[in-house]
Length: 223
Ligand SMILES: N[C@@H](CCC(=O)N[C@@H](CS)C(=O)NCC(=O)O)C(=O)O
Image 1 (cartoon, protein in one colour):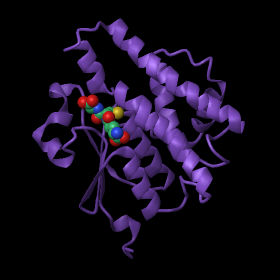
Image 2 (cartoon, protein in one colour; image 1 turned 135 degrees about the horizontal axis):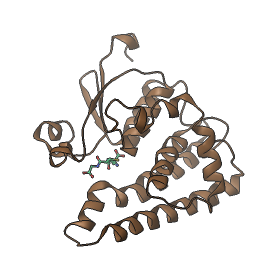
Image 3 (cartoon, helix red, strand yellow; image 1 turned 90 degrees about the vertical axis):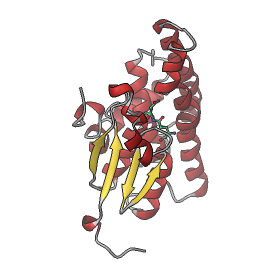
Image 4 (cartoon, helix red, strand yellow; image 1 turned 90 degrees about the horizontal axis):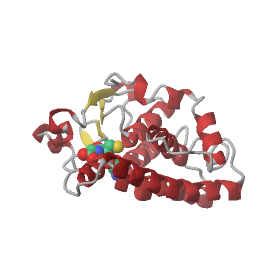
């Protein structure tokens, strides 16, 4: 374990204000009180700066976020969050209890593994470009997969009667994934009426500084 004080470490986050995956990491960093230098990667400008030679050297996947801490590069938002959790355990974003922790991961994965990847910018661009779909079809695609995922999450939240947090009584990785996804659902005008627990938990989380300060509109690269 490093004995170096946190303030002496260097930490850089490659981010894009609208990226929900980058927002997850911004929330985790904020919750843990960790400062960083933000380097914006504009996903649309210059044909997508994530495809620049310079950025591909950081993340060969050409996706944000990427975190560099003390010279080590970490990609994939959930891997970054888990890294932060292990290195800076307090406050925890994963419960100590094994089943609760697994539940948090299950909900987080519904969003990060099942909803988000098929609604990512490059997927939507592929639908519109090579697949020849119009904007209406692309938006319908987006809303369809988000609704399906939120339906499952709502059922899980209903089963546990969750009201303020997805799991238990503190912020977890599941909440960190939920808020950016709900934000994007609203951006794409998905009707959230069928998901009252999702809406209630999102509303509560959006009163907490770690969620509000990290919103897309509050980022230096926001347009
Ligand atoms: N599974 C990755 C997904 C990262 C990802 O898809 N990021 C999006 C922004 S939310 C991106 O960089 N998209 C660029 C593109 O599609 O070209 C993670 O969780 O970090």
